[in-house]
Length: 443
Ligand SMILES: [Zn+2]
Ligand SMILES: [Zn+2]
Image: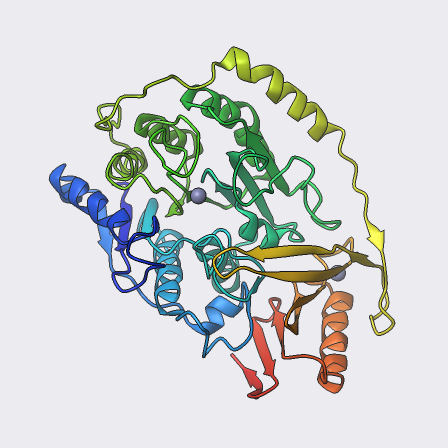
């Protein structure tokens, strides 16, 4: 029998405020609904209990600055959400389940390669921590992440932008009209991972029909061409027509169909803030679709007031978007710092805004151009203090691994202006964190 795993973690003691849209009721109503419908009694459903991710597992995907053991906002709930994703991911890879749904909070997809605090309700990136864990522990080489939250999965994109072995696809409401204001068609991957990021911004008002059309005609063929070993769905339910934060027109049934089309190995809950009107029904439809059960009877209490954009209205927009995507050409700037090891280092500056606490990180990001591997990354983040991440990628070539260690040695000798630096050697799963006050530690 095909089994479907499910794991709840409502994080009772974590919130950004009692009236904040990201609160525990997001999961409690779902839990009740699934219970009422008798879903948990289905013989193919297997329930799991959460576990805590270790700092090693978190730091493998993200540089937590400044000190991961004493953050301003406690990491505890975030580590459990990430650990829960890992737990169900392991069950999938071991073959205990055919697929699974991680119903945990807090969400994670706005949390990027560096972590200075909470942004977009996210502090740790659950999917990224999961993906790097499965690669490090189970030798999985190729994974696709499809983000169907209404907001652009900018944090996940940030973490895998230079990674040729992770295909990241985000469908979302156009960043001109919604937080975080990114996810445009020209964000197409770094120099060594060109075309491994695909952003499909959709106009407000897109409904089931438009969404399914894009999946069938654009997303699925792209995934098929990549041939991943696993598909992870960042399942945000805020495209629902009752969601208070966005303007899309998806129904619970429409979400069931998305799951049926995508056939994810694992769905990981992201956003969704229509706590009573949508989440219990959307989550139910997703779970039924994962379990191979009929989801068509699932109806949210409120009726769709106005239907979504018709396909006829949407098609010219999509054709134009596709044309612009086809005509993209990689254009990158080489800029070597004097202390950089040999090779061409490509410069990719940008900034990351932390909307929860209102501050900005200025990012100076460099990647070693390489045709043999994903390339070593040097990433300097500044916000009041300066910290550096050096990342040696999975399946690194000898030159890139050496370049990573040369950078690291240099930083150990020239750290007067730094608060912390992290070496992520993903090739050998070694993590070293130097902190001005704590000194050098291995995680
Ligand atoms: Zn969202
Ligand atoms: Zn290389």
